[in-house]
Every structure is written in structure tokens, then in C-alpha cells.
Amino acid sequence: MKRIGILTSGGDAPGMNAAIRAVVRAALQRGLEVIGIFNGFEGLIEGSFKELNASAVGNIIQRGGTILKSSRSERFKSEEGRQIAYEQLKKNGIDAVVAIGGDGTFKGATVFNQRYGFPFIGIPATIDNDLFGTDYTIGYDTAVNTAVNLIDKLRDTADALGRLFFVEVMGRDVGTIALAAGLAAGAEDIFVPEIKTDLEEISQKLKNSRPKESYIIVVAEGDDEGGVIKIADRFQKMHPEYDIKTLVLGHLQRGGSPTANDRILASRLGVAAVDAILSGNFNVMAGMHNNKIIYTPLRLAVKHFLSINEEWKQLMYLLSY
Ligand code: F6P
Image (cartoon, rainbow, N blue to C red; front, top):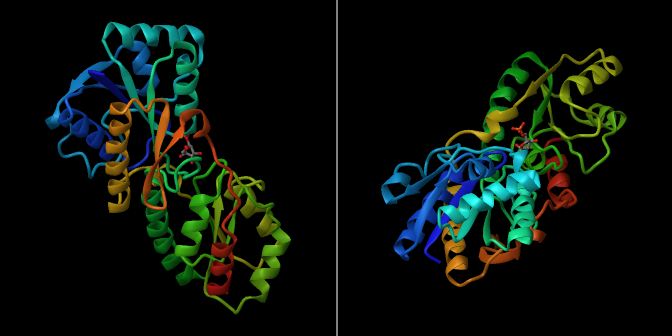
């Protein structure tokens, strides 16, 4: 191993830059050259490469987004696109690639490796925290904190005018952000894809709760009842007595400076990825379990559909009645 590539792919997550910095600096310290691959797998196909030195990753640990840019590459899904990518890697003398991303990134890397035997190392970064092989993904802690900060602001105005807000957070397939943000922001309820939403049940719950100035219901974007606009419409028809408003937090949750937790996680996983390369432990994802580094085969590090943490949910109800 002499020369490694590094790319970020899929939805960006705060802390990706901290992971890039860790990989680049650890690799350089250990005698490897590092080539930055821009725009994820798309850049791999286009040969968008640039050598990175220690200064190239200076002053980025605190920045959101990704200096390497990202993409959801359609071309990399085709045999033809992958063939070009392979030729680019050979032409540029790249021996292994560190791929920072989520489920789609690792699936792409696995298919590529199965066809060309080219080694990849994965680093989990997605705000959704829905990957098998790590307790936390890079970006999740920041996204939850961003959502909580915004919901806190919403509570001020909801309380002033006695309103009920349905606020939508990200999570196409999972309610991980909704649950954590709901508990931390003292929400009255959460709607998540893992649990069938029953608007009658929430009506009952609100009626049984003590009289309140405001209500906040956090809805994950993948909830089975649809988005907040649809839910609010239905609920307003059932309950004309509530003054209902909606808010979609959307991509705001993906931006911003990463929390200290995300920076530390990214630094540890970045170095662990370089360790894996140097010990020939290829096609694995470096993850964190019980505060220890673990490695999971990339092909298994896919979406993890956990049931919602019941204890946290009950805690939210107990404390927000
Ligand atoms: O996977 C991260 C995520 O932010 C999901 O929560 C969300 O559903 C999706 O990406 C949105 O993707 P895009 O930015 O491509 O619309």
C-alpha cells in the first residue's frame, strides 16, 4: 500500500470534514500518499483527483458539508460506469479507497469490490444513524442538536400563541432523529416510520393531558401518514379547536458545525480506517461499539432497522404529559 484515495458520497453529514482530516493526517504520518476524489463515485468515474497534504485539511475540523463534495452517482450503478472508475484508479496508482458515507455508499463499494477485487474501507457518516456495525454514525449527534435548537425556538412562538405544531425532521426510513429530538425538546409525541401512526390515539392523548399552552409533535419524514402538511390537514378536520401549524426542518439538519462528539467520533474512525488499511483488513467499515473500535464487513454495514427505543419513548410521554 502506497497511495490511497478518499471520497465522501451520498447525503453529506456534519463531521465528514473531521473524518477526512483524520484519514489524511494519519495516513501521511504513516507514509501513505492520499488522493482526494471529488464528488463521490461520480468523481471516481471522471478522474476528479487531487493529492492532499496535511495543509489541505487544515481548518476544516469545525466545518459542516464536505470539502471533497458529494454525489448520489447514478453512473456508478452501471457496469460501464464502474469499469471507467476502475481504469481511473489503476491509471492513478491508487491501491485502496476510504469511502465516507452511508448505506448506498457501502453497497456501491461492495459491488465494485466483488467485480474488481479493489479494496475499500468504509467510515459511517449519515445523519440518520441507521447503519449496522456502529452505535453512532458521524453527523447524527449534530443533526439531533440542530433539530432540538430549532424546536426550542418553535416552542417559544407556539407557547405565545397557544398553537399545535407538527414539525418534520429527516428520516426517510427511520425515526432515530425524531425520537432523540422529541425526547430532548420535550415534545408531546413523535410519529415515526417504525410505528403505525394513529391520529385518533394522539387526539385522545392530547385530551387526557393537562391543559397546555402549546403542543409539539415531531414527525419523521418517512412516517406512514405522510408529511406534516397532510397530517396537519387531517388533524385540523378532526379538531377544529386547535390552532395548527407546520414546519419542515429539512436540510437545515444536515448543515452546520459538527458537535464535539461528532468531531471526536470522526477523528477516531478516520484513524481506525487507516489502521485497517495498514493491517490489510480490507472491505470493512470502521465503527464504534460501546466506545471501542470495531470492524464490520462492508457488505453487512447496510441499513439497520432497529425498533424504536421504547424506554426513550415512554420517558418522553412520562415527562411531557
Ligand atoms: O440519508 C440522509 C438523509 O438526510 C435522509 O434523512 C433524507 O431522507 C435524505 O438524506 C434526503 O436526501 P436528499 O438530500 O438527496 O434529498
